[in-house]
Image 1 (cartoon, helix red, strand yellow):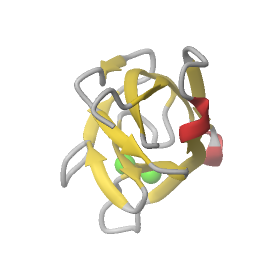
Image 2 (tube, rainbow, N blue to C red):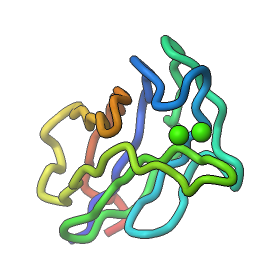
Image 3 (tube, rainbow, N blue to C red):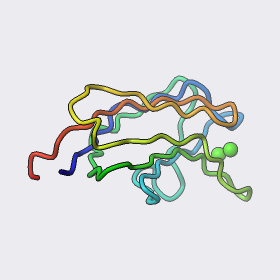
Image 4 (cartoon, rainbow, N blue to C red):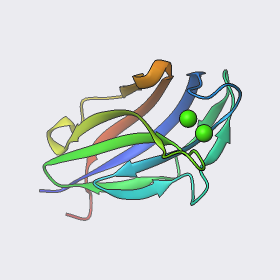
Length: 114
Ligand SMILES: [Ca+2]
Ligand SMILES: [Ca+2]
């Protein structure tokens, strides 16, 4: 049975760049938030991701990146989301590679539509 992951608050505790980052979120290999150029975010800022709800079948992978140009983008961390987490309440993904520090809260629920 499939579950749904609902994302909540993405908090930037520390950026990877000097100044603002341009971040985007990748779920199972596809970019799902942040757009082509990334979402500009500074230390101490929060983004509301509650509009982002995605299906989770088995084990899924979430990754946060900082867009850089002309350098290649920086991976800031990966996190596993599992459909078996359904109904276990609010969880926190931590992305802290490259001296960056972001947290993203989310919850997994059983898909009411099957
Ligand atoms: Ca960077
Ligand atoms: Ca950047």
